[in-house]
Length: 235
Image (cartoon, rainbow, N blue to C red; front, top):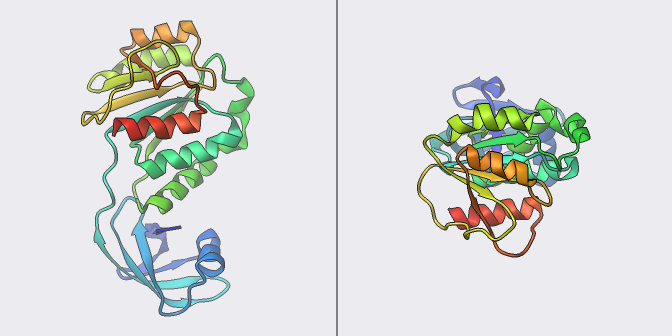
């Protein structure tokens, strides 16, 4: 945790907050803070700054805060991602928030097992927790927008065309396609498929919706590695 995130509900007044639960355990057991220590703090969807420990015990920590800095800017990027395996989902969602993705859409595809959609990892509170972990790591305070789409065809036909209207839309897919561009500055939409990629029908539908198919080269990467490689290349 490189940033202690808090919400308006944690405020006592304009300059003091009280936190407990997971954040308190991290302060006590990992950071091992004591009265007088200073750490980075940030208000969810707000500014960042410093916090001083005024009191801490087994129930709560009381901090005096001063907020003065804006969080880092988000990438001009919307990621559309075929739902990964539940054990990978936490890492990928956390990484997306950590790297500054502004918007994340999880979609179904032929190679996504239907059972994945029943995973507890997709509960709203679980996804929120993964996103918060990414923000804490990167000292960000602004949650990415996250949405789930359980049916591929309605998403591609009814939702995706409007999303690509003012963005450059890229589909990263294995095969003999032009190389993925580098160092973009424009608003971008990036589509990443499941392990093994989209099936040909899905690729055609995504192209019809305005996506330009690009490649990272001959190697087939895991989804989590493809995400970081693509973002590092694009921005």
